[in-house]
Image (cartoon, rainbow, N blue to C red; front, side, top):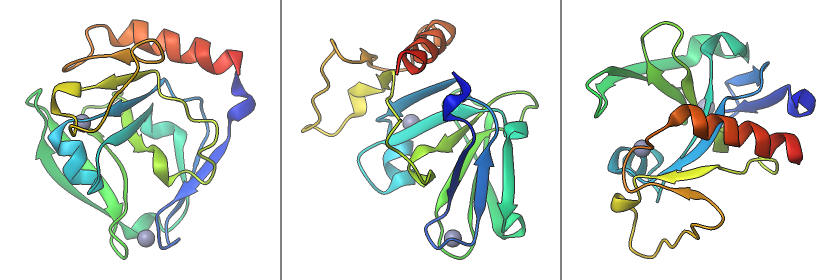
Length: 158
Ligand SMILES: [Zn+2]
Ligand SMILES: [Zn+2]
């Protein structure tokens, strides 16, 4: 399964470079309003990985953060490049909780295949997701562990 690791990525201007040293636990697409705002687009892609497995190769001091509060009431720390503004990751400040790497920042996005679409109740009206291809959730997924297992299985089969 670790044939895909390591993976490198960076911000849009190239000042910040990072490497993922472990296989992410899940990839999903989120259509919530926060993700639309954050990406300035239609949805966000969340690649879940422990921050300990994200190694900054360059520009770590250029990483700027701001805090907001998620729907779960927890503080969400958002990290972005202070030069170009690209969001690199965000996540709970609680230790040992995975962060959401913004998957579009990877150099190679060809292997990415989300396991689920979540918050479809908030999706832009033109978005149609085939439930035979992806797990679909109107809001938050009910069982993240099962989803994660499915994502790892899917990855292993590629
Ligand atoms: Zn940048
Ligand atoms: Zn979202």
